[in-house]
Image (cartoon, rainbow, N blue to C red):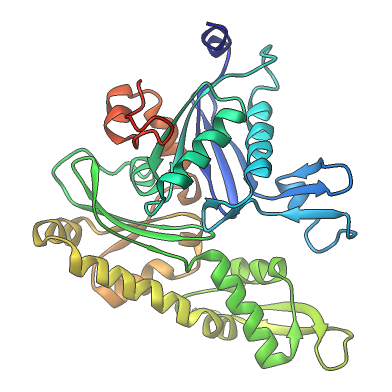
Length: 352
C-alpha cells in the first residue's frame, strides 16, 4: 500500500543501463539524464564520492584509496552494489524537484539480447534495491527499434544495429519480436582500445582511454574524408618515459579502427544471411537503422551501405533510442505486456 501511495508521486522511468553511459527517460520531461556509467568510491570508507560525468573526469587521476569503476562490463552487471548506488543516484536525481522523499517509480530497462537468467535477476534486484516499485526488462534491440519509431508490431521486417559502448547488437525485428540477431563484444570501447594499441605500436606512445575516445569522436571515421582532419595525441613516450605529443590524422585513426569496423560489417552480412527472405526483402526496401553512440562515427552508415548494398540511415538522436523506446512503453501497457521478458524473480511474466 505504501509503495502504491509513494508511486503516485513518483515519475515512471525508461532506463538504458549501458557499459559507457546510462540514459534516463522521464514520461513528463523526456530525456533527463545522459551520464557516463562510472562511479568513484573511497575504498577506506566505502563512500560514493562521485557518479557520472564527475566520476569519469577522475579516471586515472586518483590516489590509491579512491577507485573509479565501471560497474557494467559488456552491458552486464559486474558489481551489484555499485550498480545499485548508480541507479539510486539517478532515480533520486530525477525526483529532486518533487516533494517525494522516497521515490518509487515503475522502471522499464533495456537489457542485452544474450542476457542469461542470472544476469536478468541481477538487473531486477539492482533496480528494485535502488528504489523502484516495479521493474520490466525489455530487449535493447526492441527498445531501440521503438525509440527509432520503427513499426515493430507490424508484419514488416526492420533491421536495427545498436552500437553501444560494450556491445553491438544486430537484429531483424517483426511482429513484436526479434527474428534473427547477433550480439558482438566489439563496440565503442573496443575502438578506443584499437587507437590505444595503434599509438603504442606505431608511435611508441602510451595514451589513456579518455584520450583515445576524444580522438575517435573528433577525427575518427569509417571512410576517406573529403578534408583531412588532425588532432594532437598526448601521452607518455615508452622509450624515454617523458610526456610527448604527436599530431595524428584521420587516416591513421581509420587504419587503427579498420579491423573492428570490418568485423561489425561482416556480422551484419551474416545476420542478413540468416534472416528469412521475406524479411530481407522488406529490409532491402526499408533499409537498416543505426542507433547507439557508435552510430555517430563519421561515415559509418556510408561504409556499411557500400559493403552490403542496402540503404543505411542513422536514427534521430541515436544515443537516446533505447531510453526513449523504454520510456514510450510506459504509456502502452498492452505493448509492454507483450514485449517484457519473463521475470527472473518468480519465473512468470511481470504483471502490468
